[in-house]
Image (cartoon, rainbow, N blue to C red; front, side):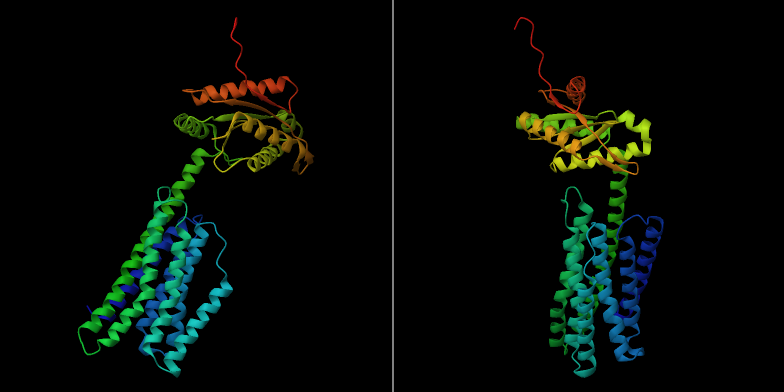
Length: 389
């Protein structure tokens, strides 16, 4: 199969992949990065078409079209990866300067001092660098948790490395100009690699779209939609795992149950919408007191629970006191003005072999004791003395 046929096949595949990605994006516009990846493949299609029309266009126009298209293919892929990972977009100014330099380089070695090798290098630098950066952007979060990210990153990184190193193949091709069979074989190998890489990257993008959708559905099943903390069922599941881990490590596992004082009065006075704002305000304050590994869930209404892995009883009480003080010092700012808020907190430690429900029941009892003793305070559950002991 000769190179023009392979280039035509590449253009057809790029058109098909672009159409598929556009359809997926059209019906799933909430998936971050998908629109940018679709545009990346669209520019890849434009590159294939402009390269096929190389001899039919003025040299300067051909150089500008192909160099801009191939560079934007890689850059839009990088932008898509940033968007998918929730990172700020790359600095467009730097990218524009980089692409302009590559275009100028390609024009110089085409019109002023013709040099196919340097022109080939200019065409390789843009996509090579951008695909390499795309791989580095995606490879975060852990292979076990996000396999699609890492598999896609591996393909992008391998393609970027090959694009950067293929200039060595070009040098080899120039040294074998006497071999009529070797030169076409090397050119076809480069095109075949591009076809395989772009198809595999497209599969990777579809896997990322599936990963995002799956994560969104899991989040809907596990998270409280109002406060964005775990719902009761998910919290109990995670607490059960935390209890098992604490037992294996022979470590303490404190659990806090928190109830917002006089919350019904807030709802009755200012309405449920204002009450929702107060709940979100409280969760934001609580999050500032917690570590990354701590667990927080909404048990229902205005009652929340927090598990503190690897913390001691004293450490848990300190967290509870800090939270209690923080809530009292920072009223919730609502459309009705600031609303003062206090909380009652119960603290307990998980006992060996205890169920999550049993732990929460005991922490809940300590919280009600705080209510009975005046609210806006912390109570640590203490075992009742054994009669006659």
